[in-house]
Structures are given as C-alpha cells and as structure tokens.
Amino acid sequence: MWLVNAEQTIAAARLSGVGEKSLTIPGVAVLTFNKSIVDRMGELCGLVDVTWLGPHHHPYVAAEIVKQGKYGGVDVTLLVPPMGASPLACIVEDLASCGVKSVFMVCAAWSLGPPVKLGDVIVPTYSVGPDGTSIHYGNTSGLIHADPLVIEALTDSCRKHGARVHVGGNASCEALYRITPEMVEKFRKQGCVCMENGEANTLLAVARTRGILAGVLFQPYIELSRGWDPSWLGERYRATCRLQAEVVLDASAELKQRGLL
View 1 (spheres, helix red, strand yellow):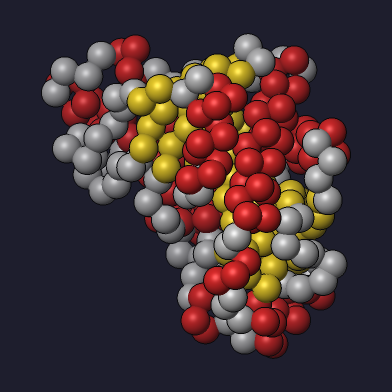
View 2 (view 1 turned 180 degrees about the horizontal axis):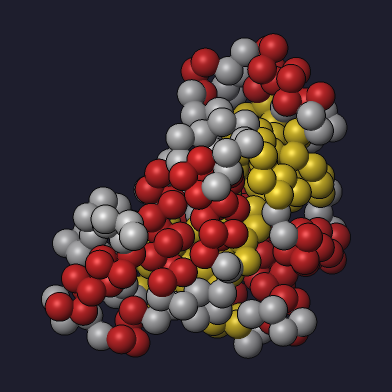
C-alpha cells in the first residue's frame, strides 16, 4: 500500500549482507539525544555497539548510534536518531518491523513554567498540537494519548527513584523561535506542562498504528518564559539525565514482569 516502506529498507540491508540476528530488535528500544543518558544506560545494561540499519541501507534516515544490552531480563536497544518528527517516524517504523515490543523517547523538553523546575521529570499522558508527521498516522485531531499502562509504569518508577515527577500534557511546536506567550498560555489551559517539536505526537501515533507500546520521559532544559539560559545544562541537568535512564529501565522491567513485553 505504501510506496516506500520499512520492509524495503530491511530487505536492502539483507541484500547487503546484514544478518537476521542484527535485524531483530527484541524487547525495548530507547531513543535519546543525551550523552549522559547514553552513558548511564551503558553502565546499567552493559551496552555494546551493534550493526543495524545504516545510512547506506536507508532511503531517508539512520540512527547515529545503536547499542544493545540487557537490564532486569529485558533486551534493551539504545538509539540516537536524528532529531525531528519526520526522521523519528521512520526509525520507529523500522523498529516495529524488526520486532520491537516497546519504544521510549527519553530526552529534554521545554517547560511551560511552574510548577515544573530544573531537575524535575515529566511523564506526558497526552500530546497536543499540530505537527507535520503524526497526521499521516491518524492523528488528525492534533491530540493523542499515551498508553495508561506505560504511564503507570513510568510514574511508579519515578517515585521509586525519588524523582519529583509531573504527569500531564505535552504540547508540540516545530518552530522554537516562533513560540509566543499566547501559545504557551493556550497550552497551559489545556493541561500541558511542557512542549517539544512534535516528536512525542509522532512516537505515540506511529506506535498506535504499528501496535506497539510507547512512552515518553522528559526533563526541562528551557523554561520558555525565561528564554534560553545555557546555565541550565549543568550538573543538575546531567544528574537528571542519569535519573531518566534509571527510571525508564526500571519501568521496562516492570512492564516485562506484567507480561507486556
């Protein structure tokens, strides 16, 4: 039905000599853009570099880093994809076609203000607002909800680790330099506590379409009303990255114990 699809990409990798073991992604995949998350997951899972779909196999995008390991009996694949909703959609489709059971996005987002503070973590229960990608996966209303079982596993894990956690909505805007106070206020009135560039919309929509679990775990690195302050990217931010890694792994182990992975 689709003119270009993940199965064609996987077939291209097979033709180039990539084996079935390398093309099988069991268990959980974690998508991140943060080095401290990569490093902490490496410590906890014994991650090693692996071969998967490279740029010479892919018609559009490929993950920059792919590593695999185990945690609590869960097969874990960590990937650093290109940023943006459109590339992320392809990565998630590729993972689904390779057998993944659940995909988490674990990274930073933009705070809409108090009560969210630096060092807090955020579990979005829904993601609202326009983006140019998730509409192609059935998100025609600009509102998509996360799986309640994944939300529960993430929030339980946050509390287990002593994190200050906020559970609420996420908003999308693909133009960071064009966010207005009026836009922020509109999303706050809809129950949103954070915003990012449409990747959460896309992850949740693609996962629903492909029949896999998905969840999002954010921390703030900008408070939009204050503007850009690079001092936020200090040790407290890095410590929260490490916390995010621990939370998502324990949540994955919990989902495994419940028979959901």
